[in-house]
Image (cartoon, rainbow, N blue to C red; front, side, top):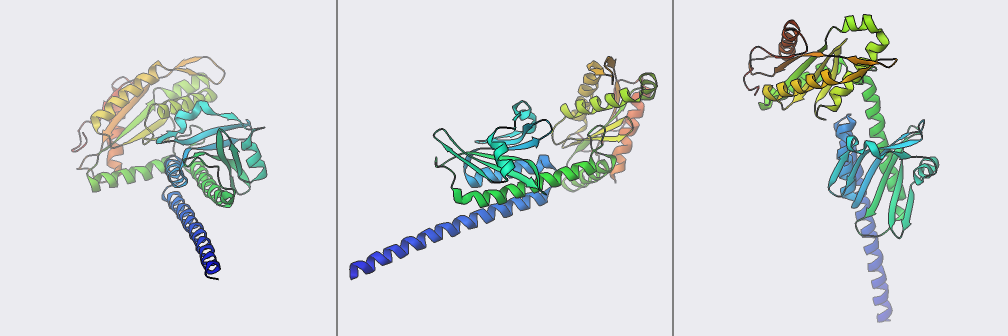
Length: 350
């Protein structure tokens, strides 16, 4: 009798222990979903949100490899847009060569079924999580190699599905936001976004005694260029010019189409001397680049650049813009294809 009672108590203890483990796991999962929700609400910029999501998910799920792929169904390709391999966070720029076919893969199986696909093989343990938003497939979250060496638990499928839905929502919202704040021709940020970011940088600089700089670009004799080669070639040149700016600036820098052939780059945490060096580097790259017309053909383009930095005497963002614009005018008056600095070095701008 006593033995049966001990056995029953032992069984009850094991049952309670299992329930406690399950509850603790559910709490951890809810905590992760909440943390990702907070990440999503912090920013609509995909470049800022994705690294945070990758760090949170990989750390919480304790997987060695995590990759988020974007789906391009027209080209039947998957493009990785963020990856976390061990401690190494890899952004889209470093993953450009790693796109892969979509059809006939586990990725397609997960997307077509709308369900989480788990793989448990001797040398591979993986979870393919479809990223669906408003019934549209945006991509796949790939989780690989759990640190405990065990396959993924089939009971976690529902949680992975919720996780995928949150990540898909972040990507979907970021794309809608990008459509609203980016120029359709160049892919750079629009003037309204430029004004908002200038206000933010100006406030940060005044409040925390930080520096930032502004580069203003104008393509030399662009109207004459358009008249000679046609507007389609002019548009092609603007697109290539914008790509050159993006490729040769930091991820934190803000490249904008200010208006017409004028473009601007906001440089956070950058003093006047460093901004001037970057401006000269970009001016040289532009001059040595062979641009391609709408119907082929090699074209030469140059640009004048005005550089200004935040100074303590400035009272509003427009002061920085006016200083850079005045420097740009000086560069054009001085013969074009050159860099000019704001005539007065602002206090704290170095």
